[in-house]
Length: 86
Image 1 (cartoon, rainbow, N blue to C red):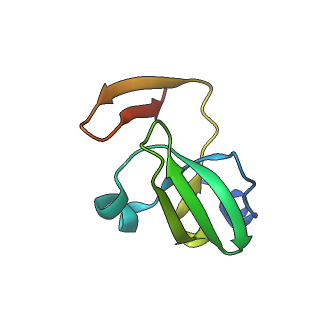
Image 2 (tube, rainbow, N blue to C red):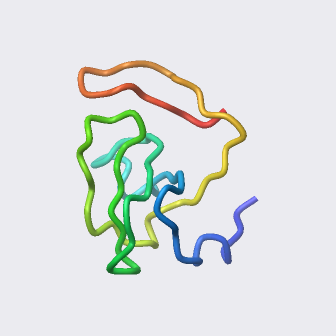
Image 3 (tube, one colour):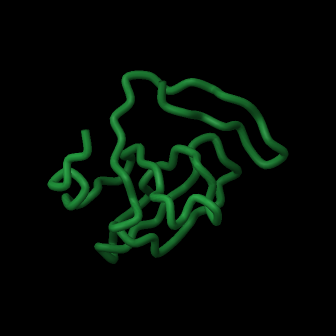
């Protein structure tokens, strides 16, 4: 169930998140890690299992907080390993 209050709270570095539909085409439907939130509501994200590339200035409105019980390795692309919540 979608909890709007959860989606409005500030994020902490190290949290696991996904991006919303408007950014999936550009960034991919992967899991991301919050790197920082110095310019809240803009955050810097890095793909979990990625090559270290960071996506700066991602607006909080486009970030979905997730708390998976487990994360599984789903596959591998040329750029990085893909992890998904189970």
